Image (cartoon, rainbow, N blue to C red; front, side, top):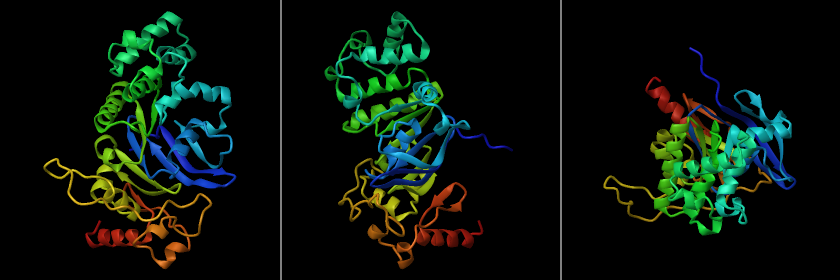
Length: 334
């Protein structure tokens, strides 16, 4: 039985600035129709990775190593005019802050229609009609009127829906959502995530969800990659990561997140913070999490631990937990 090639394959990606290297040997795959969540604190390199996939890195940033392939096609090697055709049609991105991503002097309808006219060659009347359909698709109330509104007249949740409508206008194969619920209240967050999941299923897209909140991962993601200081530290199915986190950093993220108990009330007791701050992009010897890790051994400060497979589909970069997990596997004869 052959395994289908992934839709997106990012391998050994390294991104450097003149002042440091914030992403080091990072990699993941996204299958057709899958939702993959990349999780980590602010400063982990999540958004830089997404911008690298889109080839929209800031001028000071350079991809110095690694491959980015969309269905086997090397996106790094594409000429810029061809890459422009990929953006929007094959890969689309919802940026973190819709108020700064939308042009304040153009109506939201005109901004969505621009995507359709550029990539689909639609006439102005046809693009406007399709724009109204897209606003209705993402459940913007009264789309015939809202199509002529400027961004400042819409709430944060409605602006995010406009960004989603723009992103899915050409039915891309992959949608990248970079912190799509930032600055939204919890009710609107759930609505936006539910909308993204419905569109993924209805339009047959894959979704790369970038977030710092492990609490949203279990309901909407199939697999999770945990990122710390530009490196992959754990990867597994979402339920495995949430039910049995192996890396000390993943455990710290879960301990710092509110959890619902069986009666659907938030568990009592204070949240536990991860001491210290994320490692500098200038780099340091050893595991980047070692200065904050309660399980750190002297060897952890010498060299970065490799990402090891402890079970099929279960990867972790921690010698302490890896040794323990492999011993448990051997004990039960797996």
